[in-house]
Length: 128
Length: 220
Image (cartoon, rainbow over all chains, first blue to last red; front, side, top):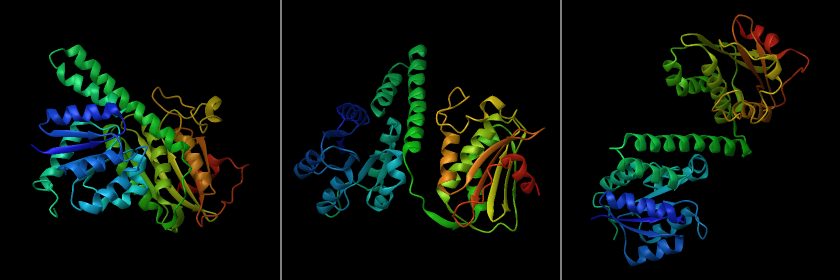
């Protein structure tokens, strides 16, 4: 069973994504801050991370940079508002597996997760 | 919004055997999507964009905008006629912003033009200014609202945000230009945008009737 880590500071979103992805057949763990996400990855590397851009303790891109220090190929799907996608974050395209634009459609979420995992084979960081 | 929309989506999936509940959740989802569009428009309007001006072939921007609006044009079986003067030099503009201007004007034109009727879009050179016009086949703008149509949040549409034309005006003015509207007898409304080609202040004469005066130049 593939392991997905969902990172978002909104409790309701964590519950929603956890329920949806569990129903879709994934094992899901959650983190509500950037630091919690990094700690969780240190403990167990997931197959994929669904990461919110805006979090109070650390910007999503900062979390992404820190993830990349040890896990160059870990698939990460960024959740962003349209405005962000249009502007400064576009430059990060190459390092992000996919984007989800808020308000996120649950069918899109499951589709993107499946697609990214398939594209990445087993989904595990090849460098590990 | 993601949470409200997502939970509604999950409830909807569990109520497929109850058409009324299923219908209600569909309504919740579509209303959230509408609300999201409104909020996005307000946020876009509130954001002061940094202009990134580049020398640009205006016809390319018009074609991009027309492509984006093509589905709506087809749905209403409209005919869009484009005229771009052959002597029109490149203009120093922010491509994305000017595309937004054309999209907003086309959006309004599509909504007011009767099915199967025509929309004209022109771009001509006048006194070293680029003059673009979008002419619909609607009923024209009532005199009593023509003063207000560029005001933020003013709308006559049931689902409009009232920000489309306000955004047009702001972008055009940020480019040192001006926008105006006039009724064309026997046609509809003509929205006329005048932009300085070199990116500096347009030679505007506020006393000239924007619609008729400028449109004569664009008819050829």
